[in-house]
Amino acid sequence: REYALDRPLPVQYATWIGRLARGDLGTSFREQRPVAEVLAERLPATIRLALAATLVAVVFGVAAGALAAVRPGSALDHALMGAAVLGISTPVFWLGMMLALVFAVTLGWLPVSGYGGGSLAHLVLPALTLGALHTGTVARMTRSSLLEVVRQDYVQTARAKGLPERVVLGKHALRNALIPVVTVIGIGLADLLVGAPLTETVFAWPGLGRLLVAAVGQRDLPVVMGAVLVFALVYVVGNLLVDLAYLLIDPRTRRAAA
Image (cartoon, rainbow, N blue to C red; front, top):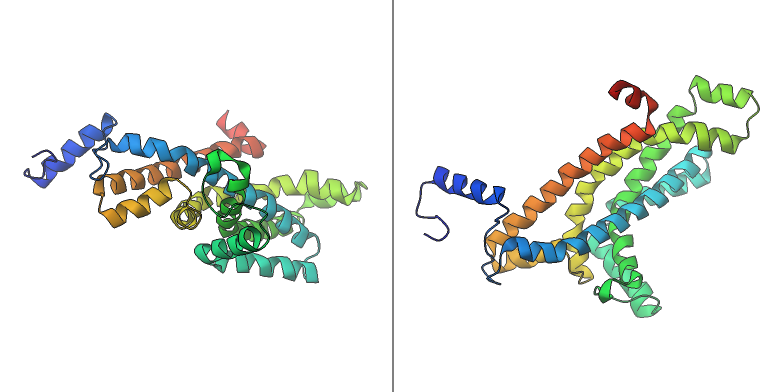
């Protein structure tokens, strides 16, 4: 009766929707606390990790894609795109363990695991591990988009005016090439969320992903449902932010919106 399980299924669903509208996600079976309270404790750590991983993917992915597009078909191009494919195909949990083994256990440069009170040193390895999942995709899309843009007439006109190549590529070509890349970054939020439970488990990161894995093992269904709902909400918000980013990048979108 407490969970309305003695009522018909449509009534159970309507009851759940009504509670959800009030911010009531139920009570954790294990902790006997509101699920919203349990999730709120873990959400900041996951957001911090996701933003750091996105920063890693954008910085390294865009740089690698731009360098590869400058000299297409060269040894540098093949090496960078090979590394991109390797990053896409490498399992997150294996990469995390290898990075921890090299940089934490062998070299002792970084902590092996834990949150460390939010210190940057504890964030580096999880962010690199999770960011590698998306860096390759960003790099390949940047290269493909930039190679297409440099063939456009306005780029050729800029070169004909005698502008330095770095100005042509950096100011005129790269900005327009980033439009499809922004889409990939937004969609990549889903990849980061999928990889977050594995990364957080490997590095004992106290985020939603690790909470979800623990809740599945403990059959704490209200926490599982709440965590999945939060992941879905973050994915929707991420795609909304991508649409808003178009207004900043593409002047044509701003004019159409006006």
